[in-house]
Image 1 (cartoon, rainbow, N blue to C red):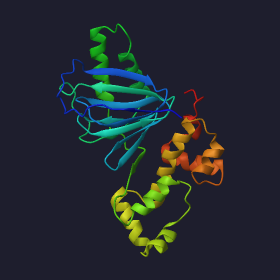
Image 2 (cartoon, helix red, strand yellow):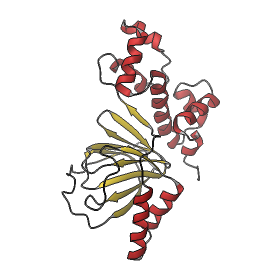
Image 3 (cartoon, helix red, strand yellow):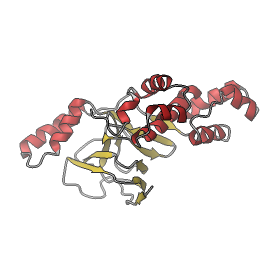
Image 4 (tube, rainbow, N blue to C red):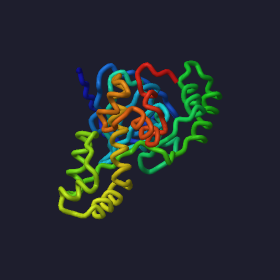
Length: 260
């Protein structure tokens, strides 16, 4: 499968004058696409009209969906990736006209209201007074969400073997007890390390890695049964329950033929 790599500059906040308050951008990527590390002089709200993408900042990996976007403050160095067919959306916010809603990347729920407001800003010929009013409404409703599809990648010598194994094969069925035996430590030691490094329990971390991997397969057109097996669930129903618990959405949401 053809892959595309894009290179963008790393720009400091406000280093380039941006003659806008909010600017809309959209693109359907025709190939699996990777963006090398870069940063923008403006704030950015990333979301998708269709499909899913990822953004990586340090050891943190976010999955971006039609209902969960990501706020990227100006100057934040990040990489990104999207599978072929993903309909990417982004809104750029002027650094000097908009205060960041967070000093660090943070999830934003793309509510029906926020979506409608952002879409209105993309309408050609929008009157200046209407644009200003709509931009004010966007800034009023824009807020961090406590719900996010975020995986923090452990970096300690203790947890790296576990993280590498699960990310390489999300169907890995080894439990805390299995890993404790293999690494010669107690289950409590591993459990505490996971909470300290990832802010999640081992079980929840594995479930989130599986959900992120599953979304990538679903957007490629895999059927739910095959995805369930690929990420370690014994049945499609068990996968569906776990997936919805983790993401708040059904697996079918990410199938290419899905229409909201």
